[in-house]
Amino acid sequence: MLLFENKEQKIINTLKFIGSPFKKFVSTGEIKEDIGLVPSRQEFLADILNIIKRDENFILPIVGEVGQGKTHLFWVLKNVLHNYNSVYISLETVYKKFYYHTYSEFIESMAVKLGDKMDSEDRIEPLRNMTKQLCNEWGANQRKFGFFPLADMEKIKEIAFKKWSKKYENKDALIDIISAITAHQLEPYKKFEAERWLIGELMDVRDLSRLNLKHDLRKRSHAFTMLRVFIENSNKNSLLFLDDFEKVVPIQKDIYESSEHTEDIEEVFDPRWFGTKKVPEEYSAEKTLDNILELHKIRGLKMIITLKSTEYFEELKKKIRRKNRKLLIMLKKPFIISDFKEKDLFQFYKENLEFFFAKANYNEYAKFFSHSYFPLNEAVLKHIFKEADGNPREVIKYLIKIFNDIIISNEKLDKILEKYQ
Image (tube, rainbow, N blue to C red; front, side):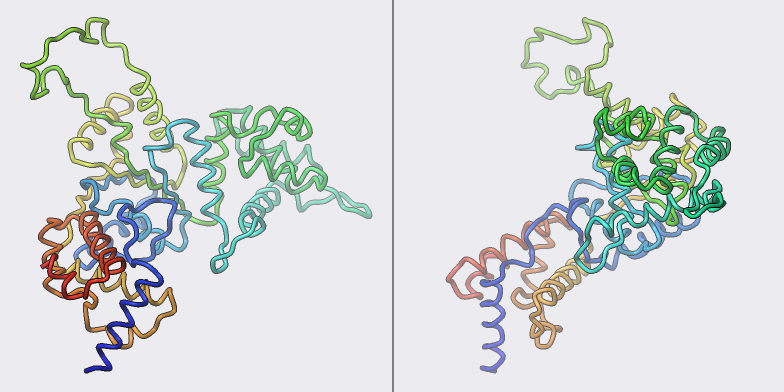
């Protein structure tokens, strides 16, 4: 018994030394997460995966309140879909240069990562393979005779343009893209500059002139066409996860009629007196939505969007119907993400602790505490579930608070846990 008590104290001491297993309560698209979904959401995940693997082009809405784990779902999908370029975009932050930012994220996503290290060579190798494959399709492997065999550049560009001119509408963008791809593969002295252009680096007039190009990927038409070229010619499938989608489908509410304080406020100014002209934020939201809907032209692109409520979904349907009702066929029936069940909390807690100690190379936790909830207990976990009302983010907030108390406080563990039972 004394030996086991010593093991418990060692766990507490380890936590005080290396910190809390629960350090953040907001999942983000930038910080990778390795913990899977809780048991009650496994069927939910299976249904989503069936749609992803079965259908080619679609928009699948995921509906859930704040803190229910919509962003965490992205990491679960990314960890499961090995043959996909899975990209996360938050519409909370990306509203300008939408195509450019989306393309940049796809370039990052296709990087070959070995362990925790990834240098620039790892990042661009798949891009090099793609440009090589395209040039070969355009006849680059048919070289002229000579000591140093050379490809007929103009003929290759002509073949490429003839193949793609009916598919890609903007001819200026298409010419620049074909020129960049061929220069990358077939002109050794321009390879570096062409590679910079293809990965989306911003270039000045001098750099563009050297490559004989008109624009870099800051230009909307170029960014969209290059995004399309990349997705349609990649050797992986593509999944675009658009978080915070309600930012581009705001529900219009008349605050002057709906405010509970209307009777107490003397109306001095009403914007409606000046007509229905949209404010800049509304223009930005409309433009971003138009950009997103235009992505339907990209063959094979699959999109998941997250919304806070079904009301936003109904508003989205109205907007799509007004803009292009044919696109409604792409819009799937929304999936509603639910709160945690009590058993979900217990498994979530255990998996996080086991992952945390394994990452810290502290193997004694798995050896001695695999069937225990230490340093917490069942009563504390039940209390957390009740107080958080099953909301995953609130659950994590409580866990952060308790573990911070354990780490910082000099009180005995039993005394600390009394406050949470």
